[in-house]
Image 1 (tube, rainbow, N blue to C red):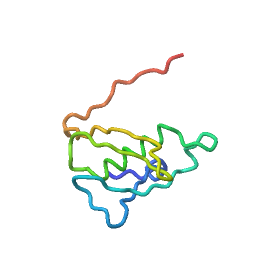
Image 2 (cartoon, rainbow, N blue to C red):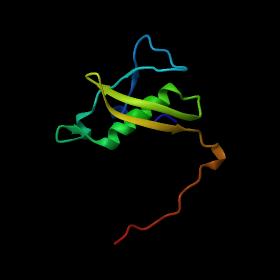
Image 3 (cartoon, rainbow, N blue to C red):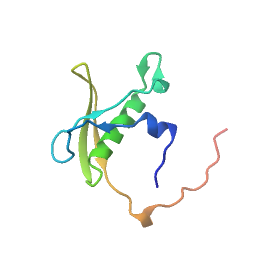
Image 4 (cartoon, rainbow, N blue to C red):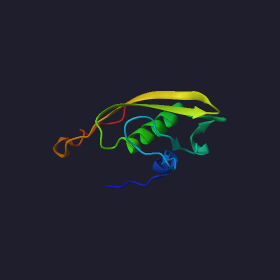
Length: 102
């Protein structure tokens, strides 16, 4: 199932031309969506989602951990370790219905 929501487009990561996924470091290009900023600063959760998307794109067939860094102007701005895995198709189940707190 392919989802193409505004958020999916906002966290898009493009593998830089010439980069080859595999063992080692690869570089993605991203555009920070201004809709996910607070003042002039990007939302931290949004930045982590961008890193997770780039990591998932690069190592989609791998289960385990991968490290991601967002670098701007030569400085590491955000760093994350992502744990990757796949759910078994029979493991997906609906969560019980809950009422909102009053």
